[in-house]
Every structure is written in C-alpha cells, then in structure tokens.
Image (cartoon, rainbow, N blue to C red; front, top):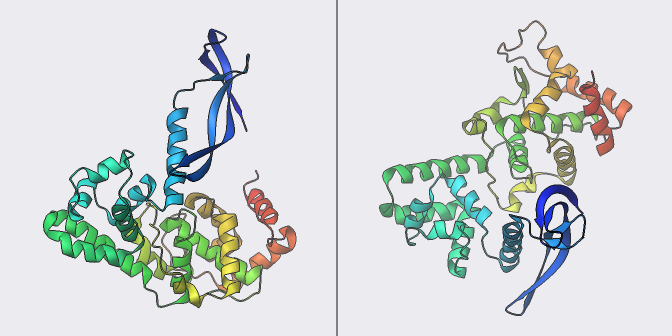
Amino acid sequence: MSSENDGILCWKCRKLVPYTIETRHRLRVINGKKYEYNERYGLCSECHSEISVPGLMDENENRFDIIYRRLSGIITKGDIHELLNKYDIEKRPLSHLLGFGEHTISRYLDGQIPKREYSDLLLRLLHDHLEMEKVLEEGKGRITNVAYNKVKKKIALIKQMTSYNTKLELVALYIVNSQYEVTDLSLQKLLYFVKAFSLGVFDGEAVFDGTCEAWAYGPVFPDIYKKYRAFGDSLIPKINPDPSCFAGLKAEDKKIIDFVLNTFGRLNGKVLMDITHKEEPWNTARIGLETFETSKNVISDSSIGDYYKGINKIYDLTTREGVNKYIDSLFEE
C-alpha cells in the first residue's frame, strides 16, 4: 500500500522529489523471541531509492513497541492513558499512590518499559476497579484528599454502571464495553436500533423491555439516561466486566446487538440522532411539539416494529449493504 507526497530531499537525485510511503514486513528477534510487524518507509518517485521521511522512524518504533508489549504481556502507553482517564487521576498522584518514584508513570509514558511486576499491577488496576479501590484505600495517605475523592467518585460511578436490575441495563453495559467508542448520546440511539431491529427485522421479539421516549435529541430510555448522564459528551469508559456478566443475554440477543454495533456503531452520536430524526416513529411521537420542546411522549414498540418491517421489505436490513443503502437514502436531497 502506498500514497504519494511531494517536497522531500533525495540524496541520490540531489533535489526535492515526490515520494511514496510504502509498507513492508519486518521481523525482529529479542532474547530469542521473534516479533513480526509492518514497517512504513519512503521511496523516491523518480529514482525509487529509499529516502528518509521525517517522523516515520518514530512511528515505526511506536508501532513495534505496541506489538512487543502486547505479545509480551506488558502494559502499553495507551493502556496507561486509559488507566489515568478511567480513574480521573494524574501521573504523579498515581505514582505516589502505588509507592513508585514520583516520575515513574511519566517515564513509562515517555517509552520506558515497566518491570514485569509493575506492569502486571497496572494492568490489574486497569481491568479491575475493585483492585483499584483496594489500592486506593491502602495508599490514600500518600495522595491529597482532592486526588483521593476524584478516584473514589470514579470507582463509585463504575460500580453503578456494572450493576444492573433489568435486561435493558445489561444490554447498555454490553454496548458500552464493545469495541466501539460510545457516548451517552450514541448509547441511547444504539439501544433504540437494537429494539428496532429485534422488533422489525429479525425475530419480532424485543431484546429488552423499557420505555422509549421522544426527546428533542432523539429516542431516549430515561432509566439509562439517569445512569450514564454524568459522562455528558465524553466517552463512556470501558469497564471490562467478567464475561459471565452477560450470561443473561441469549445467543440471539447478542447476534442482534452485534449486528447493530457493526452497522451503526461506527457512526457518532450526532449522526445517529439525525437518522432517528428522519424516521417515522420519533416524528409521529412528537407531533405538535416545537423542535427543542421537552417531551415524555412514548415511542411505542408497535410503531417502531411496523416502521422497520416496512423498511426491511425495501432495503433488506439483514445485510450491511441494505443498512448502508437505507442510511444513504435518509440523507439524499
């Protein structure tokens, strides 16, 4: 795979030349273990000799670093950033909390590879909020009250998210922990599409019960809004619950949810909202209301199911191609 650029010095041609970025397979051996990865390099478009492209060396090292750490079971810089964001804690307070040197976390983010025991600890904290809670209480004397309370608040919020009393809450948790980036706005719309596809496209039985209301910004499940509204426009963090947590979802449930995620999950919340604004169920439920007028009008399961049954006959929404054609049709002038 290659892409063409221009304006870089080729020492062989002795002038500024256009060049392409190519990809090649590489193999490194460290301590007798092989690591394979793809490396990008520059190629002069005139003499076809390899040339030095600013930034590519660092990019390749970062790419290899991620692969090396993943295969070696060592925490990555991305994981550490996720850990900091998940618990709303800064680098120095985290170092103090864990009894590390003050700049240890900063050095890890600069590229230093942690010792195995430190890496394992950080990974446990990333994936287990109860382990983080234990560490927080044991080390609270090493951080300020402000830092302690911020982490405590985040852990409480995570506990609230991982608990559920209804299947609707369980489906929401499943969506939040998918591979897709989810906000409060996109979560509401993805839940709506799960209900729509279960009622009108697949088996005709709703994956979950729960009142859906026609709010100004599209369909909303009030109970889920109350649970996740604290995140506002921010991404909802992945909780990584134990897989057994989702035992309450049938294989058919997961099939429908995964289909919705694989077709609508790539779209941001604003686009998902715009799609629902162009659909009959939401519009019908808001007849007589101003554009941004608040409403608790219910979008009935029957209206959702009937609408999607009709759309399914036109576009075959059981396929990705059919869903894409349907979405495209909504935005045609």
